[in-house]
Image (cartoon, rainbow, N blue to C red; front, side, top):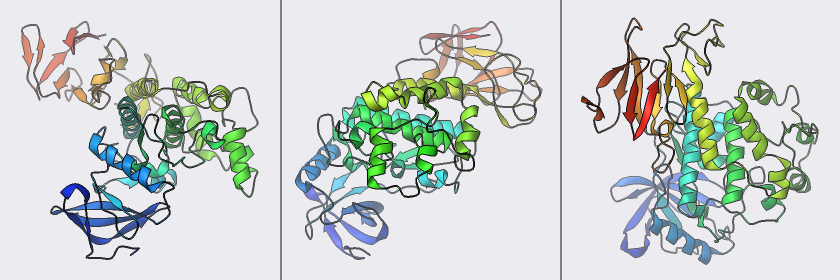
Length: 426
C-alpha cells in the first residue's frame, strides 16, 4: 500500500476538508498515486516519497501557486488541492483518468493504436495546443516525457498528468526531466529547463507519436550494448545526431531495429519531415537556435489533417492534396467534389470532413484547432453536398439563416462569409 493505508484520512490545507485513502493506484520515482474519496467523489492523490524532492518547501510553494492559477485547459489533470504535512511528506489531489484513456507507452509498444490516422493527428494537435496555451499563460512544463500523457484512441482526446513540475517562467521546479526527452542544452547543463527546451521535448513526443521511433536513436545508439550514464550524456547531449539528418548520415536507421522509422518516415508529408529536420538540426540541438514553435506545429499538423480523407471507393484512409491523386490503398483515382478554400488552407471536399475553426481563422487563442465549426455531408447518390452547422449560434449568409444543427447546400462558385472571413467553394 505504500506509506498511506486504506481508510486513512489526510487533511487538506485552507479548510478544504480531507481525503480518505481507498487504495494504491501506482508508484513512480517521486511518489505514489492513490484513489481517494473527496467531497463525495473518487479522485487521485499523488503522495511524495520522503527525500524525493530536493527543495520541498520551494516545490510546495510552486504547487500552491499552480493550484491558485488553475489549469490552462481541461486537457491538464491539474493539481486541485494540497494536503497538510503528514509524516514529513505531503501530496496533492487531482481528477482521475477517465475510462477509455491509455498511457502513451501503450501506443509506443503497440499495445494500443488509434482507430484512424485522423484521430492520431487530433491527439498530436491536442498536445501542441495544450502546451501552446500553457506557455502563453507564462508557464513551462520542464519535465515533458512519454509518461505525461493519456490518450483516447477512439477520439484522439489527450489528458496531461504530472503537472506538479510546471513552473512560471524564471522559476525552477528542481526537476530537469528524462534524458531521452530533455533538450541537449539541459542534458549537458548549458541551460535550465524553460519554454524553449519544452519545445524540443515536444518535438520528441510528436516524433514518437507519428513515427514511433526516437529521433536520436539510430545506429549510433543501437551499436552500444550498454547505455551508461556517460554515453547517454554524449548521445543525447554532447553530440546528438538526428536519425534523418540530411547532412550527417552517422546515425541512420538500422534495418530490423528501426522498422517503424523506415516504414513511417516516407509516409509523412514533406512539410512534416522538414519540421522534424529543423527541430533536430545541429543548430537547434547544439547551438540553441530557435526550433519549431507550437503555432508552426499547429499549422503543419492541421494541414496534414486536411489531407487525410476517406476514399469513397474503398472506404480506407488516404491522403489527397492535389487534383487526380490515386488512393494509396486501392490505387484508383479518387473522385472528389471540389475544394473548400479558406484564407489559410485549401481543403478537399469529402464526406464527413470536419471544418475546425483554425482552418478559417489564424489567431489560435481559444482552442480553435479542436473546435469543429461545420462538417461536410453528401447525399446517398453523392450528387448534393451540404455544410452542417456544428456551432451553437446560427450562420447568416445574406438573407439565409442556418440554425445550429442544420445544413445548407454548397456548390462550386459559392462564397460563404464565415467567422469574418470569406470561404470559397472551388
